[in-house]
Image (cartoon, rainbow, N blue to C red; front, side, top):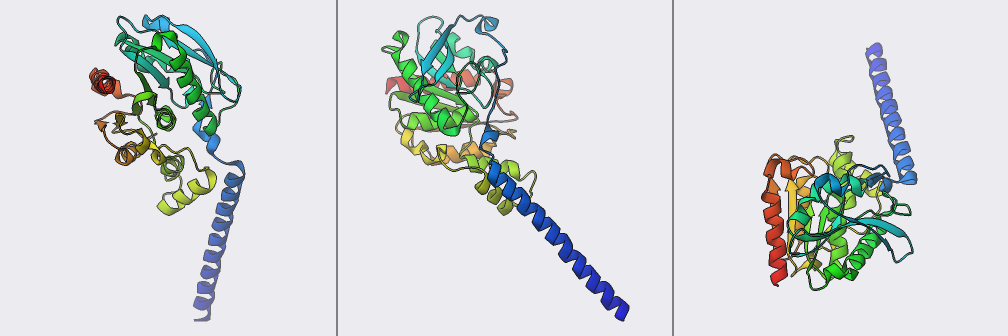
Length: 297
């Protein structure tokens, strides 16, 4: 009997030791992440050259413009093929630079839209170091640049953002009435929200994943907080059913929080930013329909 009691006591002590070690390790990780922060993990810029507009049979002009805090940003202006229908400011995703993203929107000039693509600070040839507030400031500078171009005079201005760019575009457009419509493809609703979704892969406990996201990712500039301010300007939210980067329910949350008019399109079988692979010409038709709707308002 004594041996069994001693064994039980040892087991209890071992369980306490294991939980103490686990708790200590968790607190260390939390403390480290709190100190370091994860805001920077949203951005993966580089300066590598990928594609050029000529690879898609398009002409372009290198554009330089200055932010309100004095940074010089680089972009491409792609003139519309044929009679122009509007001017589109394109907000790209979180990786590489503008040269890696032209293949995703090369159809826009052929559909009759002038396009201003640009790199956020710290991406490509743009100056500075990327921050969340910086991407918002850069978006405003891009809108200013687009509005000032002679080609834009008399034409409606639209915003088209993809992935991170979709979320940034919503925040910028909410403050810029000159933007007549917004397309957000594979966006997320909030920085902490999408961070928690990724944290669940490492910590499969919902409350703990949300807690880690809360203490390691800063608050603010979330598109879900301002998306309702787009109304009555049209909004199209596009989500990929198999998106494991910016999950489709993140896009749905944005749509649900928006005012009318709005549309939500979930593309069956599609992965992140691979809408055209599954839907072929339908993205072109849907985006054009939205822009045409906005131009008539």
